[in-house]
Figure 1 (cartoon, rainbow, N blue to C red):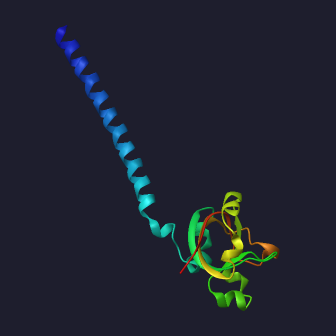
Figure 2: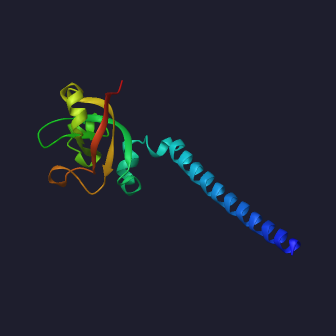
Figure 3: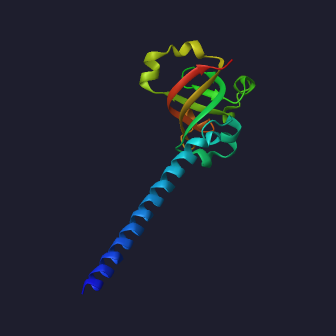
Length: 147
């Protein structure tokens, strides 16, 4: 009888250890995935060209890009190059809209007609005024001059 109880106890103990090991493996895997997401800076800090060419890859993701900013009525956009703005190549631009907090903190006019670095959520389906742009960056949380 004692042997049966001992065997039964060891069986339950080994099953418990196996389950704990599986839980820890799963937690470690999740932590590795989170770390991988953080390490993949190239998925966050991208060129506008990548955004224009493969918009589906970045749809509904937060991205950081550098480009030429133009702020005007029905034309707030960031362009791949200053020349794209000057030549009216709106498909090489992204409609921009800033979050309220950023608008209160910064004088947006100071960044007009300059190269800037911005962070916002990309939407490939929202193409700005009259659908003229290659997509949009909404809820922009960072705006700094790029020198």
